[in-house]
Amino acid sequence: MEKMKRSVAGCIALLCLGLMAAPAERPEDVKVQLSREAVLNILKGAMPYRVEVGTNILKETLTFSDPRDLTFADGRVTFGVRCQGAPFPVDQVLHPIFTFRQGSSGYALIVESLPVTIPGYGHVDLKDLFAPVDLSTLLRQGVSLSGRPATLEIKVERIHAAKESIDFSARLQISPLAAR
Image (cartoon, rainbow, N blue to C red; front, side):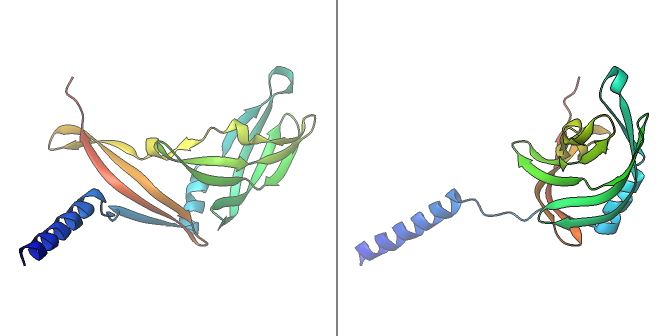
């Protein structure tokens, strides 16, 4: 009987150690769902957007405007956007492709493809003109808690581009700022 009690106690101890060693999956602090309409309104608010391509004599200024036909599919975001150029005559509707990539510091929004045809240049993919956008830098905000400065970070743990929305799951972290 004593041997059986020790076996049961040993099994319980191993079970408890196993539960402590394997961290329980925590639910997210925040879940956000951005509809296609909301994302399209964000894009409209960011336009017109200008970039310069080339150098000196062959410099072209491209202006992006009028985003439309936003779609989410296979983890990608794409839409139509009007592109006008000067001094070379460019007036076309482009269809950029964006994707979210997870790296060591969190998620980044990447321009996967942005092809355009420019007279004098030919067919060019402008994806290299746009650096990845680190979402963690966009989701960090200074706040004051009872008169004490702190930083609120929204750490995105999951992004999914579904058919009708982009779904985010994130954790909130508040850190006091060091006194100077």
